[in-house]
Image (tube, each protein chain N blue to C red):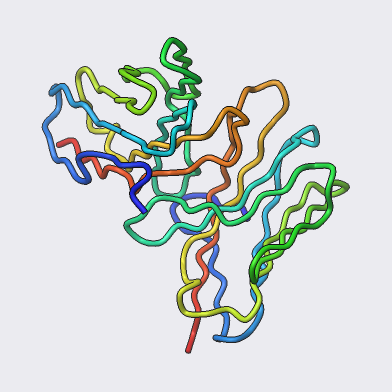
Length: 112
Length: 113
């Protein structure tokens, strides 16, 4: 299902470029999250937001920023992309209780 | 289970057999655990979860077992089907950390016909 939609699905760009990944959800959830996935590593939390006015850093927030434009929209920006930010990026949502988190199908980002 | 480097542990099973996927978690105070399935090109899909006040929980064809003594979680899939082929990973939620989950690296399940 497309309850959590991520755009674009794939992106190739160059070092130093600014990139925005977008996430929108129709689940009506308050909480939204951004993760990155690298081969051989578990998902790692970049940023999370419990509501429109709440933004929190995760374990690997350096080099990233986020914006929660509305309850349904949470975007991730790389201000100046670098090659080691090449990864799969996932957005997730959860309701007020927090569990479980539901994921989008990801954005594959390659930085040359 | 956990893996080091780029290679995921792989479990190969015959179609129709039962599968058991294991996960060791890190924090004895973790109070919530969850299993996800991830197919190639897709995002993680929720399978089943369990709270620390339970030892076992059953869903449709899946069972999660929690052994807090040895900090071990397992996912059992009954009558494994080709559509079950995917990477499976567990996650734990530590108390006091909001809703932050700590994810394992996953196990590749391959179903042989």
